[in-house]
Length: 331
Image (cartoon, rainbow, N blue to C red; front, side):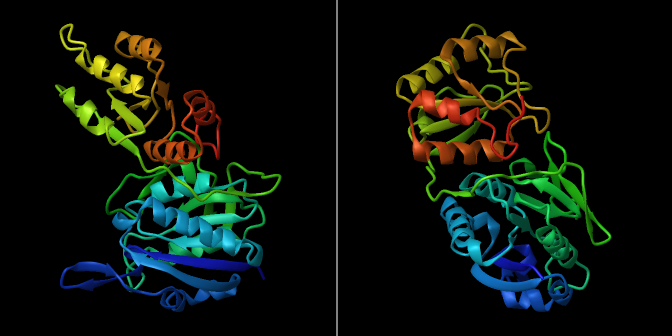
């Protein structure tokens, strides 16, 4: 039997009701006791790395999870991480950059209801995650949720209550788990040695444009940013109100200060293309800004945190940003 390590971090799956709402308090050993059939699949061990609401998950938490995988990598055949759903897609993206080229599966899962309840999606999600982690073809960082197997850089929470909470954005699902088997749509192969990283630059922020936005916002958020990701309209439009170039001028100022600007879209699917309309084409070309194309917002944030912890040289940042990692960008 394969040896799989369960790394528990909290979230709804580990929560119990209290007077102030759900609070993560169920331990990793209790989770396994409430899902006894997992012992039929593999030899499982557990680590209670943290027990937090995923809204409280931070980049330091991502590094802690990655380091836990690294420290135990040679002891186990795969890893299952239980996590709250609210920031699960950010953690999956971050781990895709902190743990690269892994021939062993690093599987994230969670649930919309606590495993403590009878009527819950927790036990099935956990069981499916272990089925995938035990599969000989499984590798890399993935999310397993509601029978879907989703590449870590492409997962996004799209529903707040439904069991069908996560979708794969602009990239096919890798597989599904059906009747205790993994049915692959795309088989992934990894060659070479895994690479682990343990540094992230947290000075990466997002600015979502709204009609009539004040240019002063750029200056305010720019002070706290090494990287500013701007979510424009549609395929990436940046407004210029009646000849007023204040927004563009603020972006020019940030560029002159050495800030890295990435243009994105607030639309959840099908990505950006700044060259479609004049309102994007001229700004991107004149200011030589980066564009995330069909990367998810979560992956854009985490990739920039990873890159700028390594280098802040604009040319190297651009080169690394456009280099596909774990299917995060497709041209």
